Length: 480
Ligand code: NAP
Image 1 (tube, rainbow, N blue to C red):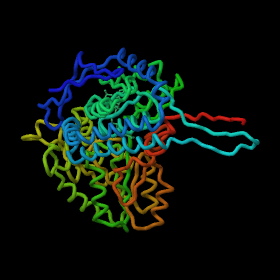
Image 2 (image 1 turned 90 degrees about the vertical axis):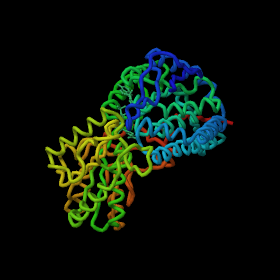
Image 3 (image 1 turned 180 degrees about the horizontal axis):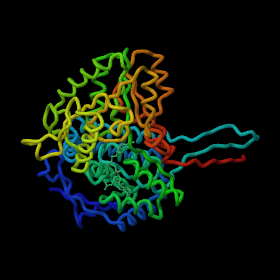
Image 4 (image 1 turned 135 degrees about the horizontal axis):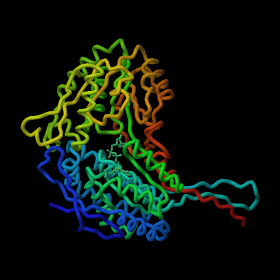
């Protein structure tokens, strides 16, 4: 079995106390051992990043991009093995893992190309013979803290724009699924990234996260994870005026209107609610259905939900893998109990799956609660599992009111064929990522990503907007 080390100043540090990374579909299998980094390691990593900064940020953008292009080629050459490893450490199905690794490769290529397009502004001055322009420059050493649910794509969509803009980084992946991020760092190393530019530390979020926020060279922190930790990072980081970017939880609604393409709407809701075990920040956890089709829709969705196959994501034909770990499973089961008390028995699911191979993993039935009160806890709090609350709405206006009555605002979807409703939704919905006649989850990397309210804080990720966080302007006035 492989021991996965930390990566500091271009060196792999493979010895030290380790922790286990177990397969959530079969807890007998240890997927890897990870060397625990310490707060002192974070300091070393941040110092190495600071030392590497002048040369890396001084390098021409296309040169930085070339290293990212090469890393993408390397990842592509290891594609199947890396995807299988992701399924084994995180639990998502193998096809979903392949989709995620493909996305990481595409993100690397997209931002590698941005190395040649890293533009500023050039405008005419009011004064004769004055040339004025603004260039974008790296901000410096950036701390990246990532969750387990997209263990490859999220580290990549932080690393790639940070690096191509000329920053140097310290990356801390989630302890539940760190190998996928390790593989990205390994590809960058193999592509020849100069020492100190990327540093990778693995271990306790409490210890390492604090050390990252407190490390002297740090200029900014990009965090994806839960709301409470995001708020803590922001509170600590802002004491030192560090820039923060926080991507956090969601309670994403899909509004289903009577004029929708019915079968497509059923499929879109089932997909967004249950695939990836509901462990997507953009997953639908509230279906808000117009009264006129409510009963028919709930019946069809219940039938679709019953057909979903839960199991080990490496097996063909499986739709839904396990929860990522015991803690996540417990949270999901606790919320199912809360849901039973609030809304009665679920229409579908509601139990941990047991017997045979299920006993070795953290499997739970996709669960559908119908007739949920909009203020119920399962309709307001993030569960981050395959649990859907269906809420009845009188009409479109009522559905929008219910959808917006949430502290979160990450993604939202509407299923309708009425173009006016589409635009009312686009302009009235309080969320950063909107889909129409698509699942609420399933975004691409070429446009800004992020939400509003308690879901997100700071500049958006991905697309051209990524550089709003990972660079600063320098404005120059020049008399000639
Ligand atoms: P989490 O518990 O908040 O952990 C996220 C990261 O923060 C992990 O690397 C974790 O390390 C680290 N961490 C833990 N305690 C910390 C501390 N005190 N200081 C600094 N860092 C600390 O979240 P998660 O369970 O991994 O992910 C699920 C959450 O992420 C959900 O709320 C989901 O909605 C959200 N999410 C949001 C988006 C988005 O784009 N909006 C995308 C994906 C996920 P350890 O793993 O070592 O604890």
